[in-house]
Image (cartoon, rainbow over all chains, first blue to last red; front, top):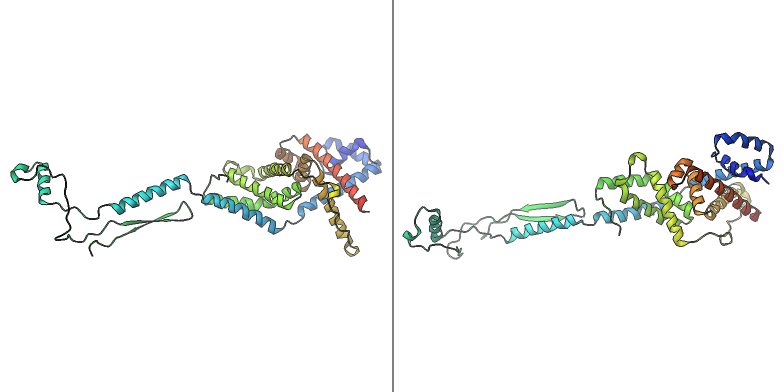
Length: 179
Length: 177
């Protein structure tokens, strides 16, 4: 049976946690008390066993599973599209729509329209030519002579990748209309 | 799902590097605190997800280990409180008796098993202090910093834990013999 009043200090001494000022007192007691010396030896053996727990190899499969689960969750999270991503995608879609629905042919001015334009420019009085005072609408009629084929506006193609930071835009020249 | 603020691939690479450096320590501590591989894996996963979430807030110059150990202890405490499963002596099956031909190694393994079981019988705070100090080999000051206690409190906890563990292993050895 060890001496109860020394047990606490011996437990600290065995793990090198005892304050330096108290070590001589414990060491002198251990020198003369078999029971406390046995206790100190048991505690040191226990320390060695605890240290061996640290050195016991962990199963690689356990580590791999943890890593896989963490990276899967983090990877999923980072691939979640942000609000900015959606805003940019919407803006790109609007631009693309605008390009696609834009009038594909240049407006050919009719003589009346030319006169109107001149009249508006103030070079020739509009009434002198008997034209309508203001031609508000200019219609392009396709029948008859067709204008020379004009290349359409470039087509914007957007490729969205898994990475929200990478969006590929591709401008494609369209074939001339009327071929 | 938790919201993770970064999408920068460089930070993801840094996170993976820290995880590969610290995953063994985190999993080992979780395993010793919870004494259950599945729970330990869950704890380690939660610890690293928290690391990812707070990576930008941490000071790399101070090292990530103290923060990781602190979070590991907290996460394990939450998991242990959730399951409320203490290991009673009678519930734990005895390890197999050592064979004569490999007696020394087997006896040593048996002692380690008793110590491992003894750890799980300690109180929450004493176990955390002892695992960090005697298994992980951290200094008393580091343990105090991780646990948010004073050094004197930690010394008192590890002293008490060592004596209880010694009593436990002694009882188990006598039961065996």
